[in-house]
Length: 127
Image 1 (spheres, rainbow, N blue to C red):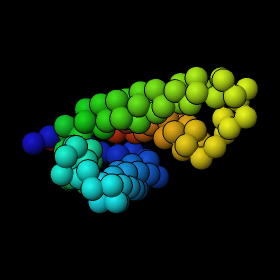
Image 2: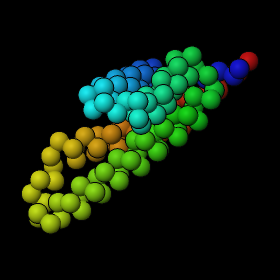
Image 3: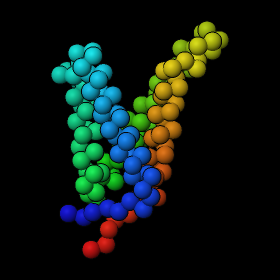
Image 4: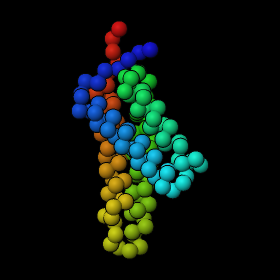
């Protein structure tokens, strides 16, 4: 199988830390709410597979990380941010910068950095 090379070690560890953090977060939320067997296993499985692909530095990891960052970090966070803005529109934005809004803003910015880093700091290894 083809391999990839990370040209920036900070980005590599940021990606591993982010994937591990999201995996642990989804495990915690799934167990706390009891929904891990219903639908909570989907993000856990995706992040576990991506963590394996990135740690093994397989070439398909690049496509998987791009898809994960776009769909689950950027788009999902933008939808949550938009919902928060619409919800706070009625209250004249009194509670806009609560913990949920800032959490999703940080997730969106992290996803943008992961997308940028994947395009610039990951290259295919030459045989």
